[in-house]
Length: 195
Image (cartoon, rainbow, N blue to C red; front, side, top):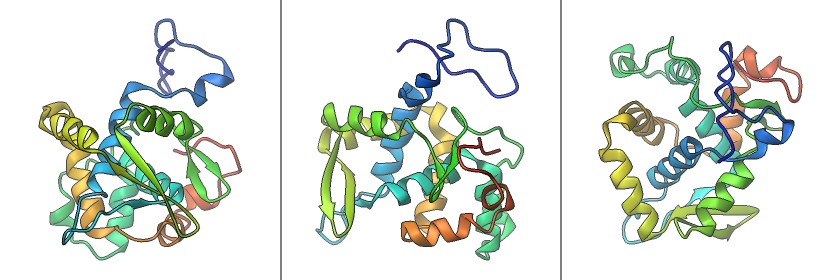
């Protein structure tokens, strides 16, 4: 890892790589978050292997995971009562580097590197599914995800993942349409950082 990306609104991290290429490099935080996300959506059900279906779905779920304020708004619009959303702090800053607006909504240029790293290290399997690819954790990846879930520093992410799996386990296209109801996304220009 060359350096940590600068926090929006704050000073650059020490020795942070300021080059445009830095956006395409994975961070350890991103790898852990994406591993937890894929694991949450790839548990076996009724003896069948389940996959998180496609990068569009992965990106939209990751956006909601990273941006608690928007997660709360989307869940409220879906009719989820406020008492079930108390653990989501709407004032919490987005996790990791900011995502950008791209063709199908929120996107992070580092996804290719993050997924490549997880797949290359044998933590995630990829399989062709219909018009795209599905992702699931391997046994090793599932064990590592379980260890991360047991670490108290991932409690907020784990609580959000439970809400995402319970209420927003929808197709990537459906999630994209839900996010386009947010003016911050619908009105953003391509490649603009999302807030």
